[in-house]
Amino acid sequence: RNPFFKDEIFEKLVPAVPPLKITIKKKGSINIQTTGFLNSQAHSLKPIIQIGKNGLNDQIKTSVRQALDARELIKVTLLQNTDENIHEVAEILEEEIGVETVQKIGRILILFKQSSKKENRKISAKVKEI
Image 1: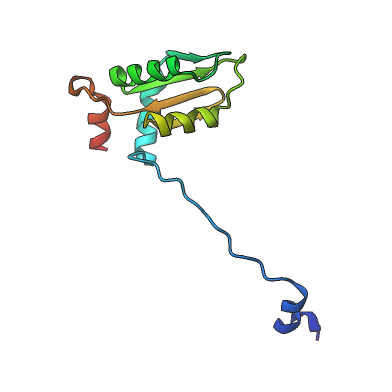
Image 2 (image 1 turned 90 degrees about the horizontal axis):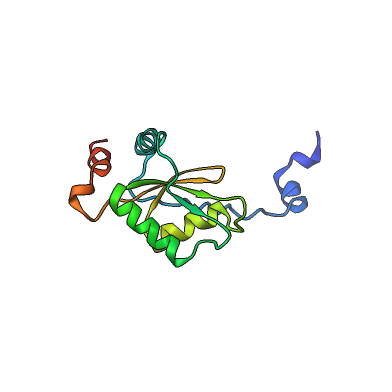
């Protein structure tokens, strides 16, 4: 018999490992079906906002707000000359504007937010049906 397989000896040799803390980021109304639908809707869209060497400034944030209010679903491109990180940009826009990040592909963000104007709520009406 091998003495290392006994529990009391094993516990002395191997320190106790603390339990893992797993945090799950809660997304608003986006689930897998909604993400798939929004990706299919965004496939044919061209990026309408570009973040360049000036980074994510107030003008860009205002443009994102206005575009989302008019369209609900947009693509944002991070140009090669920007120092911004796509994950940081997505996080900032989620916190400050309240957008939902549908997908991040390379340097392209797909963003969704329900329009405050009822006449512009075409995509969100379809999202509610899903």
